[in-house]
Length: 233
Image (cartoon, helix red, strand yellow):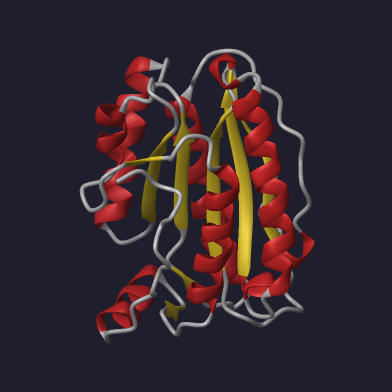
């Protein structure tokens, strides 16, 4: 599904776009998808509690199970609502990555057209397996790395369960190694994500372009992320 960027121009605050790529393939059936849904519902509640994050953070959810699709287009934290996700199908992670990068590019362009500044976008990938779309994934992973190297996105790869292929996830970033979720600690992860977006929203690491964002970061304005209590050691 394709969505055109939607930006609330009545909100003059800088924005941090956060794309969540969630594996909803058949291997996520049962308790994993249930815990994922509970965790995201918690996130939707938590993000609304921070006065800055709820209007500066914009979240998109892209699922990949049989096909990659935008479940929730970029939405301000104060308006984000839970969406029940069901598991089924294969793991077209490459298609999801391409879709996410396209959406992020369009969203940044929408910010510029609206005269809004923005933070470096975040891209999260949560998966319990490995990509099933072969060369599409290989090409998309290279595209993600190139965007990261150009400082156009920050990438976070997270493996879920013993079958998660961290070696493939390592292809997504040269700056941040993939980590494993501790069991099914989705609620802990989403609580951390809300706290991280709160910290980011309170920083001054934003600009009117990718170069402007990089310059703001180079001045020493680093976003302090809380400890990741949801990850295995």
